[in-house]
Figure 1 (cartoon, rainbow, N blue to C red):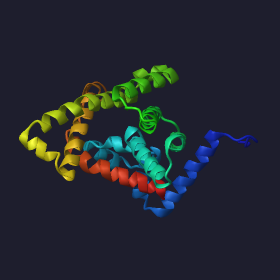
Figure 2 (cartoon, one colour; figure 1 turned 90 degrees about the vertical axis):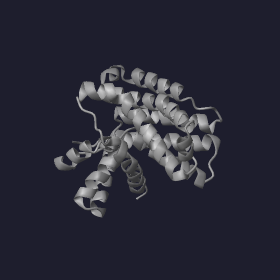
Figure 3 (cartoon, one colour; figure 1 turned 120 degrees about the vertical axis):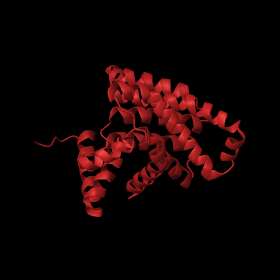
Figure 4 (tube, rainbow, N blue to C red; figure 1 turned 45 degrees about the vertical axis):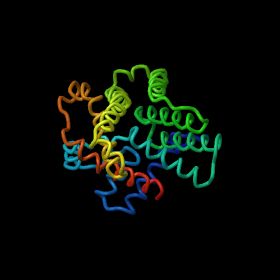
Length: 248
């Protein structure tokens, strides 16, 4: 195909993805490269069926579908960079917005990443400009913007799962946290960093799973029962793998 004379973002990003793919294969063995590319770009084409089946059975398939989890790790990385170079206010917001837009373009702008990037941008804007971030307002704004951009997305499985997962977390996580803190043994769990982390991971994961339960049953007729346990290990490892791959 004859190359056009003008700059095209989609063409440039396709070339960049191809270069990243080649570099990852140069650094890693094929099976590890396949997982790294799935984490970074959402490209699961190189994963073999056995690996996919094992990941689904373990209840951690979401870590290979580029979505809010991945955008959250990218946001944390951008915030760390902003702190390292002492960026404040508008400068920090521009860095975060630019980084998120770049990541959306790099992953070829799937709807799940666009939705998560909208939420992350709104959350970061609230923090940076000294406003109280309201989870339900951010979720509703992201839904409205997403549906203005793609109205039929309301009927997609990804839209239903991602928004119901966040809604489940927003509603159930604080409720479960308050209940646990009111119990003698539960209060002890929040006194130590490790037990607080594990407890929060469980309540967040439980909120997400209960929020998505109706859609899981409607669309897939199955619910992964190991997710509460395996996600305690899989999510931190996925975060470290994603951030280290981005930095590399």
